[in-house]
Length: 616
Image 1 (cartoon, rainbow, N blue to C red):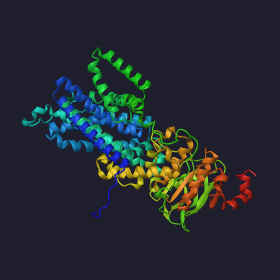
Image 2 (cartoon, rainbow, N blue to C red; image 1 turned 45 degrees about the horizontal axis):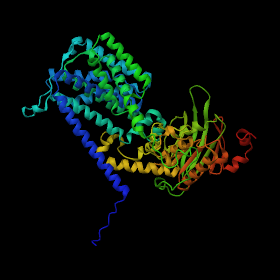
Image 3 (cartoon, one colour; image 1 turned 45 degrees about the vertical axis):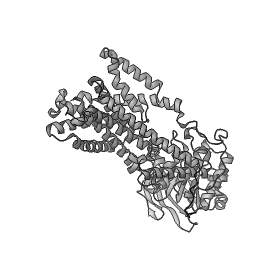
Image 4 (cartoon, rainbow, N blue to C red; image 1 turned 30 degrees about the vertical axis):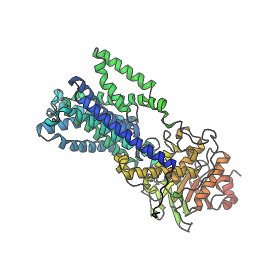
């Protein structure tokens, strides 16, 4: 015996190691295969090679659009404008100023990225159709400038700069610009794939589908949108830099039709998929060469096929393959998930993330003084509301519909800003704090209608709750799977998310999509996403709504356990039989005013409350 500990290899551990090695081998095989494909493309005849390189450029453009359209729901029609900026700036700087094209690349990325952030900062004040129109106008302006300015060559355009050839010793590799284009496409695809494998991805989808949820988890949603849009613009500028080496740069190659074609590529291939934009770009780029007929008839056939594919198969080619071939994780269930749709799982061992609170002390955690709030010129919803919540207490908010309970919760959480009054959280004035800033003070909340991403699993939704608990999620996202620290953090986050679901009693639903779980599990998932970060204060807006009697009892046990761990809670609820046994204090609101604050027994005994709220 040498005194060293004996390493015991478990079957689960060995399977994990085998799976990791298989992934590494698969990744290496993909890289080798892609290099071989690039070599073949670089040695093709000029016509076929030109077709492939144009498809590669448009593949990067489609990826750039899918980055914002798929993950954030922002359908930008400005990609053509950023594409033009990259192409014209490269051509003018390389030919007129004789600047090395590789020195130009980071400059182009910076220019288009900053332009995208500025356009995004202005355009993101609106959403949906208005955002698309704003970015569309940007492309029109760039096209008009390219057409009318003398420096851009007008409608005739400019001859693009030559791309540097390989040294004589490497000529066997073939065309240097082909290698550049294909490796650029690989880099852009890898960048987006890395982001999708990082914990930023569920946050981006939460911003798209449930922005209040992302804000409540600590995400500065506006800044993230602007940053991602800037990255998307940089990729479009990158495509323009590359396109300038393929021939003539003219306004017709960047007009509004190009932006629409890029959108069609994304929709045909499959929005919010890594490979879908590439499939769509290959189809759209190859279509004119394959269907080489009368241009007018060609456009009609192309339009008809595009409309048919998008309307009949809205998931796109890759989306259909994922749904029918790989099932996309939809069949992953654990235990009795399919057999007990409405029955909650018994409360399991507590999540260790919730055990960091000490015993309750006589400390004010939330204090509101003189809160007044109204929508526009209408009557005030809240009038001179005072509220004090102490550490470790459960404080109930009750009142008839329209009394201002949810409005007060939104004021405390930062989604609404009162016209007067002050709000203090853990001794800090937070009147001008955004919800994300309040989350960093340990304040989390749930919503009356569960704010979750329905296409993600319950565990992925809970990962969103860890956003402000793990440093560098945004900064490291582009290279997350490549970093040992990223892989380690992701494993820890997944473990914590699974533990939080287990503690909430939803452990059997870890790998089920939220869109396919019962209402009770949705509520438990929402609660787990809040508790996973170990908050000091939780606001729960009608958590028992729509739950069965058994589920309500289960929820009561969870909340009692949180209270025992020192968590402070503010609960809005109509079911007084559920709420009153839990509460230390209850505040009654009516018509935006506080009627009474006291214990549950004092509230029950108050004649005004019984008349206004209890209907007696």
